[in-house]
Length: 234
Image (cartoon, rainbow, N blue to C red; front, side):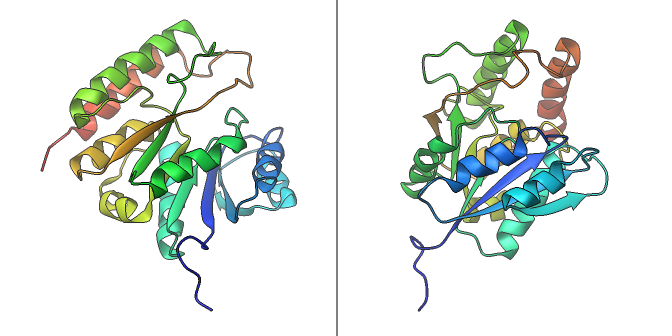
């Protein structure tokens, strides 16, 4: 019997780099959902036991031999989604900051018309565990992105997202960014006239609010991504 679209599994991709302490818990949280999921971990050149822990927890692991960056991991995820004929694709981080229970509301928003659904940490009242400069930076770049794509974006750097593969297919050939891919994907989706939707999510920090990204490097790379990728309405 041929499965209908509603019966087909949701393909969930988790880019991860040196997340051996968290990746198993993330996978187990997703497995507890009453949903049909295919779980993949894109191990981006980890030097610890991320791949082993992910495989042990039950995910399919795809390994990059060297660390290429989050954008490269997402391109690998998109390529696999297209090759496997996925209808709905979800991405989330491997560090445990995203709540697996919120996956369903993100997917439902995609099924209800969103080509790209972004889980926003700023649509729900909560105390975010992140450095002040990062909070302000995300707010600024989200404001700027809102103007570029002509729709309100409150969390341009969130990686908890759901995609329709038809939308992925339109933008995939244009993706180049190896690291700060969140902005690039939004720009490419905006160019393709995709419907971008945000839903509220919670977020927790696994490093007690201390970012691995320095203030200057973080701001520079977000700005670089915008400038290098540009934005050209078709």
